[in-house]
Length: 140
Image (cartoon, rainbow, N blue to C red; front, side, top):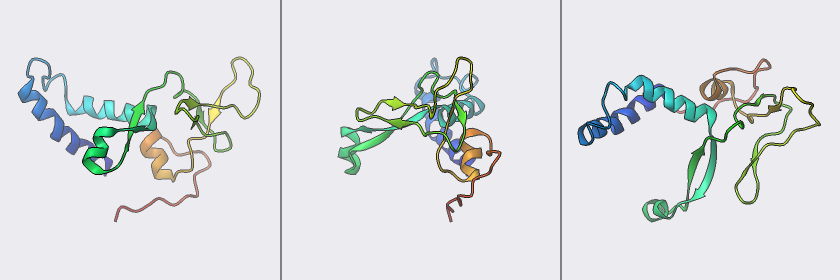
């Protein structure tokens, strides 16, 4: 599950930092609860973008990796399945398009994409009022 993966990643990274840099990383300040909070921000408030990664290419033969970016205000629109999805232009910049003219103070929506209900809950903390009919992939 995601919780187990989050805990395993914490246990892989943080004890080494506690030992190597005790003045910078104290267990009291860098608790699992804070780690999980930070991971939840990354999962629910960032935009993934494929970037060229020469180091990764040397290790795996792949030439891109996913970078997660917090884009101020881009995480504010709520989900509406009939709205446009966020996209990237040819240079990789994040683009949000309105599907109609909007007035000052009006709610802006984007589509969070075609996801199953479990993905909506895990990534965004809600299930749409008109639940998805998309089936979730099994990890089995």
